[in-house]
Amino acid sequence: MESPLTVQDALIALLKADAPLVAALGGAARIKDAEWRGTTFDYPCVRVDFSSASPEGTGNCAEAWASIAATIEVFSKLSSSRECLTLLGVVQTAVQRKRLTAAGMTSLEIKISQTIPPYRDDNVWRGQVVIYSTVIDT
Image (cartoon, rainbow, N blue to C red; front, side, top):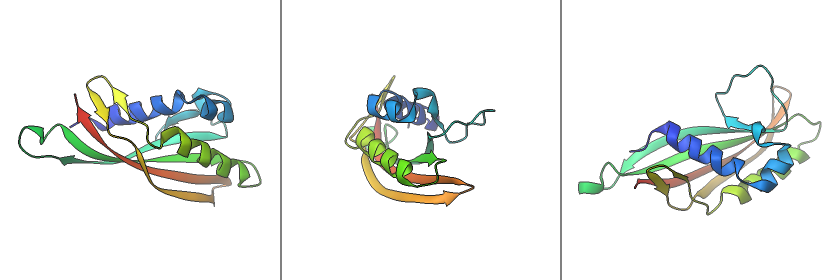
């Protein structure tokens, strides 16, 4: 089964490769893992939170397949939730029906299980796109 770090890095790479998302954010450096603790925090931004992985398959495939879930969080500091809503749509387009790839790993198409609309959280708007897929050791 793939490590959580490999899956998270593949998802971050997928997002950073999406030109419309990078343009809307003002740069790929605004896409990071959810646990990033830098000294500067620029808005708007996107954070990837790897949620879970569950082994699947039987026999020889038992260790090679895993269902994964992740949450892509979108943050905006503007007065209105409009920017956050717009970015949620861009993130949806960036991930829906795409595949994660990394050395020794590929995935089935990413599916969006839900989009949580913006809500106020510590003076910022936060929205979430929750995704799942199956990753396969190749």
